[in-house]
Length: 409
Image 1 (tube, rainbow, N blue to C red):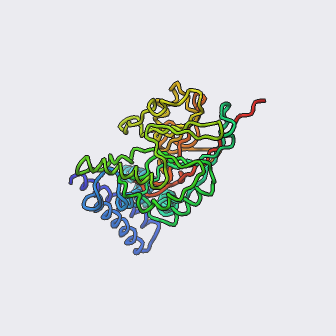
Image 2 (image 1 turned 90 degrees about the horizontal axis):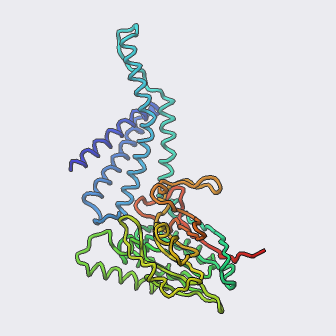
Image 3 (image 1 turned 90 degrees about the vertical axis):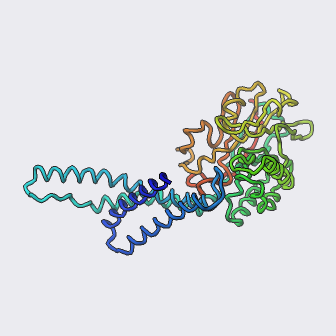
């Protein structure tokens, strides 16, 4: 309770602080009431959702996600505005003290707030404010198809120009627009890839989250099949269960649902993709993540019957697995496909110039193609969203990778 009181007091203080800047720029009282009204509604909704509303668990429910998203949006506006105004206030205080000590007038008064600075502060703050709102209502469904061509000396001849579509981190429990998901499914099928590979996190917490969307994902088509692995969210570890049996049943239900949708779920095992006498080993491990993340993945078991000379594609949800175990393994996994990071759903990407997100401070390999020791990894930015119900700058991704046989000259 004390933490909530402190939080509410700070929030109200920030709101009043920004109100002073608004009064400098806008002379209409209705604008003040509108601003304070919106700020109050956002606060009340957030407090309600995180005290009395929604289900319990570490992963936010849809109402909690939106409550958090709106709070994040308005707090960002407040903090950036105050960043500019606080420096001016310090100047005003120092100037006022100087006038009192050395000024000719006996009257002590602070210089008035400059209208231009208030306008500039609120104008700059409105940019991330608008971006976060856009991310919640449009950006989270701004699907992008990213295409890569990777060359290998030892790719079997029959797999030259072989196309793979990778999707990851569906997080179906966060979806709220069926039409947009239908569009994305059509976009995936339009790639006409040879195989579709899904690299984990089909749900946020429970198998039932996927049921309203199962018919759509069941329409995904690839001539050589659809394959999947589990991500950390698929095990149901982030919510309380009345019994361990219910938790085990939830995971079983999710596995059964994937089978019904036509996915071949690889649980520390492998399959061969074959074309004539040529073949590729497709290896799938359960989730393995460094730190406190689940470590059910068993690379040795999954590749136990794979030859060292086989061309190998590994599906492993968390890219930290590649960093910690895969690239140093004697088997030499030519291509690893991961997800997990979501690119933090926030960042700046301008091809050929900049690729940045705060998640880079947590994950060395966080989005796109990387190469180490002659091996590649693609870290998919994710299909869905989690926590903050939106995306800004890091858009939902459908990856298409074309394998090429390097031509010797």
